[in-house]
Figure 1 (spheres, helix red, strand yellow):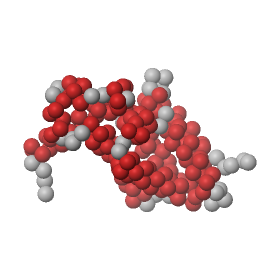
Figure 2 (cartoon, rainbow, N blue to C red):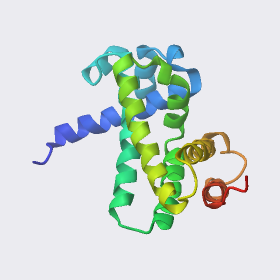
Figure 3 (cartoon, helix red, strand yellow):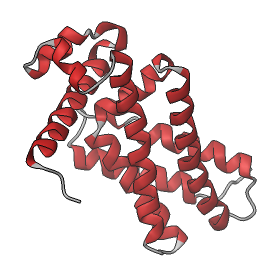
Figure 4 (cartoon, rainbow, N blue to C red):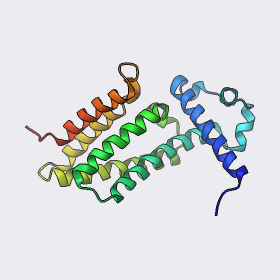
Amino acid sequence: MSSSPREVAKAQRRERYLEAAASLIAERGFSGVSIDLLGSAVGVSGPALYRHFSSKEDILTQLLVGASERLLAGYEAIIAEGLSDEETLRRLVRFHLDFATNERDVILAQERELVNLPEEPRRRVRSLQRRYVNGWVQITERLMPDASRADLTVRLHAVFGLLNSTPYSGSLASPSRVRDILADLALSALFTADSA
């Protein structure tokens, strides 16, 4: 069933509001962004946002749960391609870097503001994140069968920290150069045998 033009326009406005919220939250923090400020940033009154969101917390929830859902969906799409484990991991690194580059403000908001989510959405984000990380762990377990799951998890968390540092590297080089450097470092961390 296709959406009506009105539904499409409403969904587009909602996405624009979420993008503006991500930018403001990344810049000012969740507590520093009022509904009126967000409304002003998108050219509507603050209360008009309540047509799309039930509360300020709902905006943060939609932003952070949505980001985790998109990451997991991207992972699942790459897995569905049936590539070798090594190529899958390479694609996942690039996918995550593209996400971190294209959704810089969301990465910053998630990093800083997850604690401000109500308990249930915070659990949902954590559950989605665990599924995402566990998927990467399963692939690396097949590539490095002698490594312990704990060691692989530590290695992957370090790689995610590196990949998610993209927002902090923006002005140092071109976005494509930053992605190339971070991809090389991440892949080196993933494919280098443990010498300990």
